[in-house]
Amino acid sequence: MKFTDYCKDKLLLLMLHAFCMLLLAAFLIATAYPVANCCIILFSWLLILAVWFLTEYFRRKRYFAQIGIILEQADTKFLLGELMPRSFRLEDSFYRDFIRRSNKSVIEKIRAVEDSRQEYREYIESWVHEIKAPIADIYLLCEKQKDETARRILEQNRRTENYVDMALFYARSDEVYKDYLIREACLQETAEEVLQKNKYAFIQSKVQARVSCPDRVYTDVKWIAFILNQLVLNAVKYRRDANPRIRIATLQGEHGVCLHVEDNGMGIPAEELPRIFEKGFTGSNGRTRGRSTGMGLYLCRKLCRKLGIGIRAESQESAGTRIILEFPVSNYLSGFSCREDSHNA
Image (cartoon, rainbow, N blue to C red; front, side, top):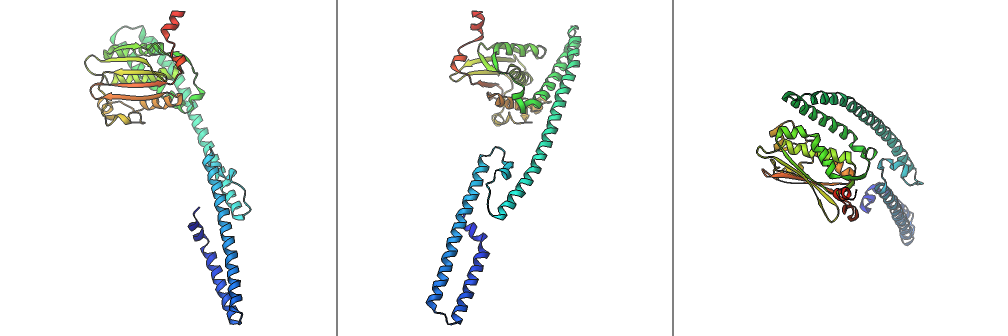
């Protein structure tokens, strides 16, 4: 609180004191009171007023500074009414009570919104589990058929399943900690499972894929598989027409393991590269190829942040794109590989 602001707030009170002092001086002079004594009285009044004014200013400044510190350190700032220090001033008690009543209303609104979101999330999860049953049935029926029509149905069924998975992971993305299990994972196996899952998309698009991920990391396999799946599908969608290739590999770094998902596809324009992880951003490639939601990479970044994994992109237009996942593991853990474990076994 600035001293000038405090003076402006007390301006009427100061003007009242000045007016009273002038009236008193006029009365004393009119009654032939000695001028010297009159000056002493006015000086004493002015001194007492100054001491009171400064004391009150520093007291209020300290009080509001304390409230500011409490507000800055509080995790739930809307509970300020409960955390405010007590004051002997009546107006402070009223303000505190008003803030508490307002906060109570806010908390009730927040609770209602959270309950609504929880119900919606539970409905989405239930819907996803229900719809996966017919998706699995379609997959089994088409697997028995070896004609081109069955393959196309399988491909569209796989795309439908991917959109369903996106809805499920998006619903759970704000509460990752309730649905993940950190354990040692072999990235080679995870990457191969993702490629196998999308084999028909690779066959139809004539995309060649290569995996070289001997390193192990500590993460949640299910969430990493989803992230890899989105990156692979993006690479297939924005492939080049001639000899499209995808390479998934790991590199051992000083502070952990880096997983590279690299393709030789259309690439991303330099001006669009900083925005590819934004929600709903499709870019020029998305508008050209069509049916792009702009949610895949956004979900990847959101889940990576929740899991403590770094994600970044490098790309050159018409030359390809590389997405890099950075797993922060210790040197001890990163020294082991899938090949070494299989050799010891």
